[in-house]
Image 1: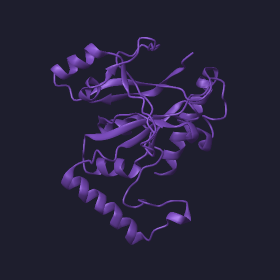
Image 2 (image 1 turned 45 degrees about the vertical axis):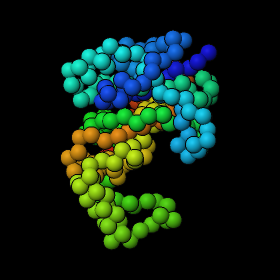
Image 3 (image 1 turned 60 degrees about the vertical axis):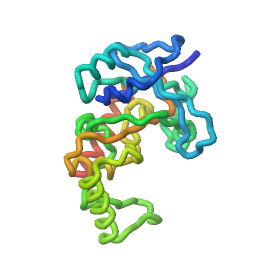
Length: 235
């Protein structure tokens, strides 16, 4: 039986990005109260030879069309995905190496306001000119002048050309303890976009699986605390 999981957050996406999607197979149902639900497929962004399962619209076609007719820039959307991890697999959602073994990406990119992402508090770190490109791995260590040069180049590029859709942010669904969505890749682009007061960036969604349901209440509290604590440490 297909195990459909849902994002921990609601995302405000451009309805025009949703309108181009086909409707999901009638065998799939959205067991959630949300009015618009996007079901992401599977794409290996590192290997073009692998077959792609395309994103579909699981629920809310009429609302998407209405939003476009009324020129609404963004509408609230729940993201769904089919788990690639066994329903009773306790370890894979918790361990990074195992999680990435099953990870797949949405086939399409979507547009969102980065200020909305910040309101969701799902960033794992905040990148600023002061801490840009500081990595714990010594392999990627840069001098302060190199770090500032890279950050300023990215900022000048966005100020001149806007956000480059070829480099979408990656939001991984249920990344933290298999229950909490987090921004997985793109913290520098996210920080610079906000610095430049840009209100439209591209994003893709990725997912692997979800923690067993009976653990959700406990894991949700721990995951929220983990993100809160990381944010406190960076202030």
